[in-house]
Length: 233
Length: 106
Length: 91
Image (cartoon, rainbow over all chains, first blue to last red; front, top):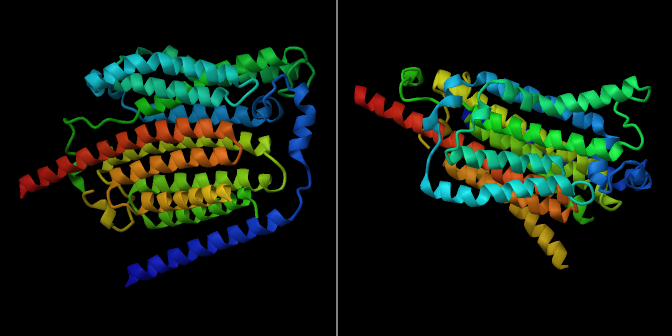
């Protein structure tokens, strides 16, 4: 009885929420937009250093968001690693050495690495960029991990810390350097825009892949030797 | 009524579905699924609504791209936390919530 | 007309997979349906003229999330099974 009442209440709340959201969307869609962002963007696109508008927004016009985003990712990665037992990062039995996966890996890993490189490069003038390349790179790492590669660089150590912090550090350095140079925070010096964007995108790709991979690998593993903790419920 | 508006209305519906799942389900992984569905709904609204009048708008697209990457990082962190919680307590739902039907053998 | 049909079908499929992912009894099945939801989202982004997001969603929603969640499901399931067997053994 109480249970069905509870279900009814939750359904009512969710329906009301959806209704209000949908009606506000309907109302907003009737009003004309105050600023035409797309036109503003296409007028200023040649000043951004890249030809693809989404990359221009991500790494030039709204680069503050991207800076904060990589900061959030680094914090998430650190939190994930600190949750992990060290053993789970080094346990060789964790890798499922399946022969099919191994064969698949030999074909896929080079292909996916090339794909990640292409996506990174394509970001300048057509769909692609650091985020997609980072995701593909992380997926490659997950495949290698599942296929039984040792992935020694994922152990807590200098290399892992460097990989996690690289993107954020380089991005922040560029931002602060331009601020010290007398321009606004995160304003790239004219003439170097394209180079700086390519550099930042490359390190962002590495860092995003590293964070996602570290979060995947650091999921705690319950080994057979500690069953007593779990049987309390 | 354009296609973009249709997608943003669908996004509103996904938000509602996700909210329901978040409130009603008790298994933590299911809550995580519901949370992700709700996030996808928000992204659809964010991209669909500005494109209703003009053509494709790169600014919200870039923001949503950032949002998707943050969402996957949050999901991965949540999975780590859920596994840690399960490791420590042996439960798959939060304390204080009723032991639900999903808590049983899957 | 065909485009409207495609959009309508896609929206219906999105909502149906979302509901199915949440209502499925089996957790493994729920995760698999959620991966299908991610792929459909990628198609929806293409329809919304956002190829960048579609690329990211295909790599993340269909690839990484799936591996993460399936790994977690198998992990949570195996231990419960073991705990149950232990409980049965004690009785």
